[in-house]
Amino acid sequence: MSDNEKNTVDVELKNVSKSYRIGSSEVEVLHGINHTIKGGEFVSIMGPSGSGKTTLMNLIGMLDHPSSGSILLDGVDITKKSQKELVNFRRRTAGFVFQQFHLIPSLTAYENVALPLVFAGDRGQDGVTEAMERVGLSHRIGHKPNELSGGEQQRVAVARALVMKPKILLADEPTGALDGKTGEMILSLLKSLAGEMTVVMVTHNSELGAQSDRIINLLDGKIIE
Ligand SMILES: Nc1ncnc2c1ncn2[C@@H]1O[C@H](COP(=O)(O)OP(=O)(O)OP(=O)(O)O)[C@@H](O)[C@H]1O
Ligand SMILES: [Mg+2]
Image 1 (cartoon, protein in one colour):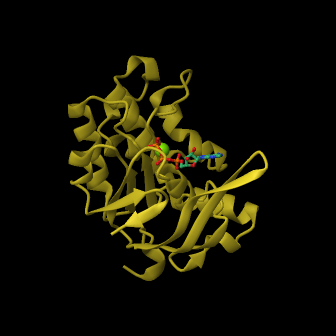
Image 2 (spheres, helix red, strand yellow; image 1 turned 30 degrees about the vertical axis):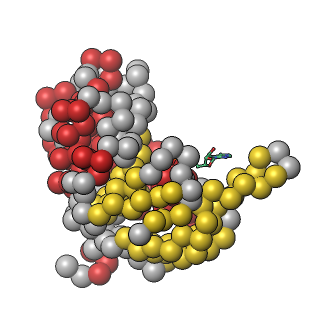
């Protein structure tokens, strides 16, 4: 495969810090993170509540800016991009999955999965059927979220993340709202996607974390080796 066909992305974090302003004070919650995630890797971010996992995920996913340091996706420094460039780049690069699925209740599974294409102004919806097949839900395309189990809803959310053919999939506690067996199914699905794309998952579940290629342990805003 030539470089421009490559559909994974290396992530390099260089001295990344993040502070939040609360009232008149600045609180630093990530402190000078240096770390590389290789294209196609499946990594889990683990650590206590408040250690900065979601903050780190949001920075990698370009949903937020670091206060200092740089983040390179395949060598491209995303901290140097304008807001407009970033929106486009994010759309083409990253897919997101959240703990609470965040599906739109009034739309069918198919329509939920098609939404990123609609937002991107893409009229063709070929990718939707393919994404639904990929998560094993071709037989549920006409169902609304409340007609689906939790595990099925999360699979729809994964399909929605896949429809733009992301190079990196970011999942923040994707199994947090599911029972153990259903969580395992979502984990297997993410595992099957790794390699094809880079997968970064936040989890509190060490059994699930252990099934990824590697665990990043965060403590008080620092990676502990
Ligand atoms: N928008 C914000 N404004 C101010 N402080 C914030 C903001 N977002 C997060 N924080 C603080 O940053 C720290 C890290 O939060 P973060 O959400 O990254 O933790 P987490 O590891 O994901 O925790 P959890 O496991 O509970 O989801 C916490 O102390 C939190 O209160
Ligand atoms: Mg979090």
